[in-house]
View (spheres, rainbow, N blue to C red):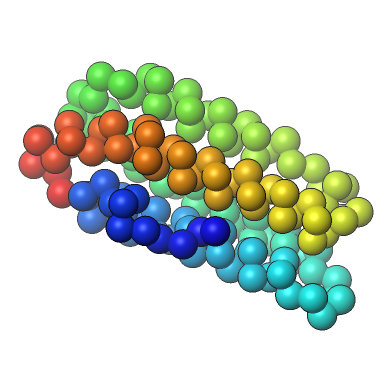
Length: 137
Ligand SMILES: [Fe+2]
Ligand SMILES: [Fe+2]
Protein backbone atom coordinates (compact mmCIF):
# COMPACT_ATOMS: atom_id res chain seq x y z
CA UNK A 1 0.00 0.00 0.00
CA UNK A 2 1.26 3.47 -0.94
CA UNK A 3 4.36 2.11 -2.59
CA UNK A 4 5.61 3.87 -5.69
CA UNK A 5 5.73 1.62 -8.72
CA UNK A 6 7.36 2.44 -12.02
CA UNK A 7 4.10 1.69 -13.86
CA UNK A 8 2.62 4.77 -12.12
CA UNK A 9 4.97 7.05 -14.01
CA UNK A 10 3.28 9.70 -16.16
CA UNK A 11 6.63 10.49 -17.75
CA UNK A 12 6.32 14.05 -16.41
CA UNK A 13 8.82 14.78 -13.66
CA UNK A 14 6.75 17.20 -11.61
CA UNK A 15 3.66 14.98 -11.70
CA UNK A 16 5.67 11.88 -10.75
CA UNK A 17 7.29 13.75 -7.86
CA UNK A 18 3.92 14.91 -6.60
CA UNK A 19 2.49 11.38 -6.85
CA UNK A 20 5.52 10.08 -4.95
CA UNK A 21 5.00 12.66 -2.22
CA UNK A 22 1.31 11.82 -1.99
CA UNK A 23 2.11 8.14 -1.57
CA UNK A 24 4.74 9.02 1.03
CA UNK A 25 2.21 10.94 3.14
CA UNK A 26 -0.20 7.99 2.88
CA UNK A 27 2.55 5.59 3.84
CA UNK A 28 3.53 7.69 6.89
CA UNK A 29 -0.07 7.63 8.06
CA UNK A 30 -0.39 3.90 7.54
CA UNK A 31 2.82 3.33 9.55
CA UNK A 32 1.40 5.48 12.31
CA UNK A 33 -1.80 3.45 12.39
CA UNK A 34 0.02 0.10 12.28
CA UNK A 35 1.90 1.04 15.42
CA UNK A 36 0.41 -1.14 18.13
CA UNK A 37 1.84 0.62 21.18
CA UNK A 38 -1.63 1.51 22.43
CA UNK A 39 -0.86 5.23 22.57
CA UNK A 40 -3.71 7.58 21.67
CA UNK A 41 -2.81 8.91 18.23
CA UNK A 42 -5.97 10.80 17.40
CA UNK A 43 -4.26 14.20 17.04
CA UNK A 44 -1.46 12.77 14.93
CA UNK A 45 -3.90 10.87 12.71
CA UNK A 46 -5.99 14.00 12.14
CA UNK A 47 -2.87 16.02 11.41
CA UNK A 48 -1.67 13.51 8.82
CA UNK A 49 -5.12 13.27 7.25
CA UNK A 50 -5.16 17.06 6.98
CA UNK A 51 -1.76 17.02 5.34
CA UNK A 52 -2.90 14.33 2.93
CA UNK A 53 -5.97 16.34 2.00
CA UNK A 54 -4.05 19.59 1.55
CA UNK A 55 -1.38 17.98 -0.55
CA UNK A 56 -4.02 16.21 -2.65
CA UNK A 57 -5.73 19.54 -3.34
CA UNK A 58 -2.39 21.11 -4.24
CA UNK A 59 -1.58 18.23 -6.58
CA UNK A 60 -5.02 18.25 -8.23
CA UNK A 61 -4.77 22.00 -8.85
CA UNK A 62 -1.36 21.70 -10.39
CA UNK A 63 -2.50 18.82 -12.63
CA UNK A 64 -5.59 20.74 -13.70
CA UNK A 65 -3.51 23.84 -14.50
CA UNK A 66 -1.21 21.75 -16.66
CA UNK A 67 -4.12 20.15 -18.54
CA UNK A 68 -5.77 23.52 -19.01
CA UNK A 69 -2.57 25.15 -20.24
CA UNK A 70 -2.23 22.62 -23.04
CA UNK A 71 -5.94 22.39 -23.86
CA UNK A 72 -6.49 18.81 -22.78
CA UNK A 73 -9.92 17.61 -23.94
CA UNK A 74 -10.74 15.46 -20.94
CA UNK A 75 -10.19 18.26 -18.43
CA UNK A 76 -13.81 18.56 -17.22
CA UNK A 77 -14.18 14.86 -16.67
CA UNK A 78 -10.85 14.71 -14.90
CA UNK A 79 -11.79 17.63 -12.68
CA UNK A 80 -14.99 15.81 -11.76
CA UNK A 81 -13.02 12.77 -10.64
CA UNK A 82 -10.80 15.03 -8.50
CA UNK A 83 -13.82 16.75 -6.93
CA UNK A 84 -15.49 13.44 -6.11
CA UNK A 85 -12.42 12.32 -4.27
CA UNK A 86 -12.14 15.53 -2.24
CA UNK A 87 -15.84 15.22 -1.38
CA UNK A 88 -15.21 11.71 -0.09
CA UNK A 89 -12.30 12.93 2.02
CA UNK A 90 -14.46 15.72 3.41
CA UNK A 91 -17.03 13.14 4.45
CA UNK A 92 -14.61 11.54 6.87
CA UNK A 93 -15.96 12.06 10.35
CA UNK A 94 -13.64 12.83 13.21
CA UNK A 95 -16.01 11.07 15.58
CA UNK A 96 -15.76 7.75 13.71
CA UNK A 97 -11.99 7.95 13.84
CA UNK A 98 -11.97 8.69 17.53
CA UNK A 99 -14.16 5.67 18.26
CA UNK A 100 -11.86 3.21 16.50
CA UNK A 101 -8.67 5.02 15.53
CA UNK A 102 -6.83 2.15 13.91
CA UNK A 103 -9.78 0.34 12.34
CA UNK A 104 -11.46 3.37 10.82
CA UNK A 105 -8.23 5.01 9.68
CA UNK A 106 -7.12 1.74 8.07
CA UNK A 107 -10.42 1.54 6.17
CA UNK A 108 -9.97 5.13 5.00
CA UNK A 109 -6.38 4.40 3.96
CA UNK A 110 -7.39 1.34 1.96
CA UNK A 111 -9.97 3.46 0.14
CA UNK A 112 -7.43 6.25 -0.49
CA UNK A 113 -4.67 3.90 -1.66
CA UNK A 114 -7.06 2.14 -4.04
CA UNK A 115 -8.38 5.40 -5.37
CA UNK A 116 -4.93 6.88 -5.96
CA UNK A 117 -3.72 3.76 -7.75
CA UNK A 118 -6.79 3.56 -9.98
CA UNK A 119 -6.81 7.25 -10.71
CA UNK A 120 -3.14 7.38 -11.69
CA UNK A 121 -3.35 4.28 -13.87
CA UNK A 122 -6.68 5.13 -15.48
CA UNK A 123 -7.23 8.90 -15.50
CA UNK A 124 -3.77 10.40 -15.14
CA UNK A 125 -2.36 8.03 -17.72
CA UNK A 126 -4.95 9.34 -20.15
CA UNK A 127 -3.30 12.78 -20.27
CA UNK A 128 0.20 11.30 -20.19
CA UNK A 129 0.61 10.73 -23.95
CA UNK A 130 -1.22 13.95 -24.79
CA UNK A 131 1.13 16.07 -22.67
CA UNK A 132 4.23 14.12 -23.67
CA UNK A 133 3.38 14.80 -27.29
CA UNK A 134 3.20 18.52 -26.42
CA UNK A 135 6.74 18.23 -25.13
CA UNK A 136 5.84 18.15 -21.43
CA UNK A 137 8.10 15.76 -19.54
FE1 LIG B 1 -2.49 12.75 -10.17
FE1 LIG C 1 -5.58 13.36 -11.64
